[in-house]
Image (cartoon, rainbow, N blue to C red; front, top):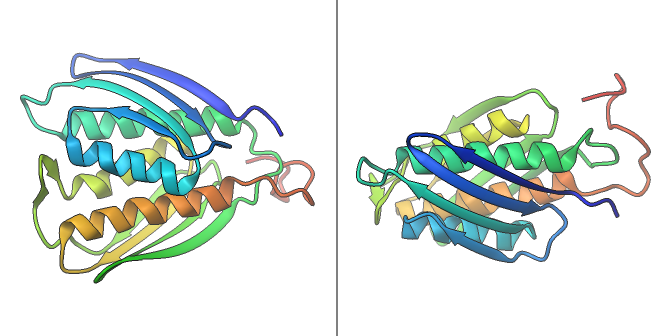
Length: 195
């Protein structure tokens, strides 16, 4: 198996981030963003996607959670892009729905190199702890843009904690499926010969 790992750092006036990703991991996570619920979501993302993930983020939380969540997504997307390289041998497409009690979330992904993002749904409450619920949507959009994914997400439910958590889990399971190496495939999964 190839070494599909990446370490990405990013320094701005708003955040300082050091992130390590192993696509073919065991689901371990060591995450510190300063936002408890976001740490929980990233840990869940790693666990259910079987990605090994380390995130150390020092952000301007005195402002709000936006820059921290967005910039972690940018760095995580960049790490996926680097770790996957030319995407040779991957499954490429995947589709998952994940329930959490009354909530259900769906994710459809094409690891295409062409970033597009679509979202259907809303969140029942504005916040979960110190996490702004709509930042789950923005996290996924920023991840898709920087990883080169075409990503469609949908969510429905009655509790924002469940809705956001179902989204992160659906995204994790879908990315795990799509980035797996298919032993039957040689080269890039495209008739163009490149993604």
